[in-house]
Structures are given as C-alpha cells and as structure tokens.
Image (cartoon, rainbow, N blue to C red; front, side, top):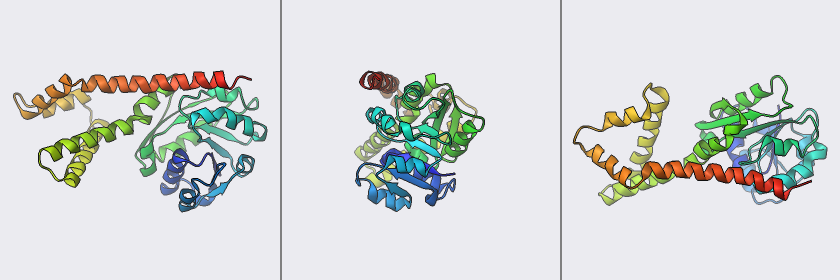
Length: 273
C-alpha cells in the first residue's frame, strides 16, 4: 500500500509521521508533492519521497491524501482530475470542503473519503472522524479506519457532522494549549516555577481526559467529585463561571464550525465550472 500526500505542509507531515511512527506503513511507501522546496527539510527528516509533480505523485500512490489548505483545493482538483485512476482512493483532509465539492471536480466514479484528524495524531493520541462518498467500494472504509486508528481513536460518521467535528477535535488542541498556558500562568503568579507549572497543568489535563475516556462518569460528575462543600475548588469554579468559561468554549466551537461551512460555500463560489 503506497500513500501520497498532495501538499507537504503541517497536515501532511503530522499524518505521515504518525503513521510511520506507529508502524502502519514504511517511510519508503510514502511520498509528498509540493510546488516549492519550502518543506523539503522536514520531508527529508521523515525519510519519505518528494516531488514537485502532482501527476508523478499520483503515479506512485494508491491512497492519495488532499493535504493543501482549503482555498487551494479547487485549483488542486483541476490539476489532478485527469490523472486520477480507478485504483486511487482519495482522502481529503481539508477543513470545510465537502465530498460533493470534490466529487463534482474529479472523474465520475472517483472514490472519495473525507477525514478530520487532529495534531495529536503525530504521537498516536489523535481523534479522527471520517465519512465516505458515494463511490467507495467494499473495504475502503476499513482502509481508512485501519490507518486512522493507528493515530488514536477513529470514528465513522455522516458527513453532516464533520464540520462540528473539526470545531471540537480538529481545532480543540489549540483550546487545550490555551488552557494549559493559562493554568501555568496562574501557577507562576502564585509562586510556581514556570517549568513546574507547565508540567502540572499539562499532566492535569491529560489525567482528567483519561478519567473521562476510561471511566463511566459524565464530566459534570467528575467535576462534582473534586468540588468539596465550601472548599477551594468550588470557589475557583465560581470564578470560571463568572468569567464565562463555558460560554467561551461553546462559542469557540460554534465559530470554528461556521467558518468551516463558509469555506465550503466560498470554494463553490470561487471554483464554478
């Protein structure tokens, strides 16, 4: 099985490195294409192939990942459409770009899957949801599931949820990093050394997340377990509520989801046949 990434930036590097590190595929079976050498150093460090030609990449790949930024998808599909063959399985990693948009710009019958992984995939702690197009064959879903499950948890769902998935787990690591940074700042303010504060904050989020994933309690129940009557934690929760902590997170997810939907609309408008 050979993998090709159309695009050699952060997304391609994250997925390629994650799969290689997990032993899902050898570096010799992976290649990436890009119009410039901007990412060549990182690509060489991964040990994967590189070409400036999208056509050449398609010739050496069976599974083809669309790994360019959303505004470039229309141009990329126009460039590769004539070179996609029956043997190719196309997996899009682009936020806000629908399967219908892709299928309408490639040859009839092209097998398309849309996936939304996230950056912790590089260390095998990712979260991916994928949905399938109208032309997939028996076994295509299993191929996607086998690949992405090597990067963390992997779920299959209807495409209608993918933009919301992007807003929760796709963008979610950024929210988590802000939370870790803010917790560490609080610790520093109260006298902790910076490195100690960062380690404590990061491990606390990691441990709390594992309690949710591996336990049977709802997050609100786990929160209540930490909040003793009249204790320090309930006072802290009160401050979070006053600051609109929950409201901010909900609105952040909403904003990211709406932006993803807008990206798809803009691409339809800008890439009319």
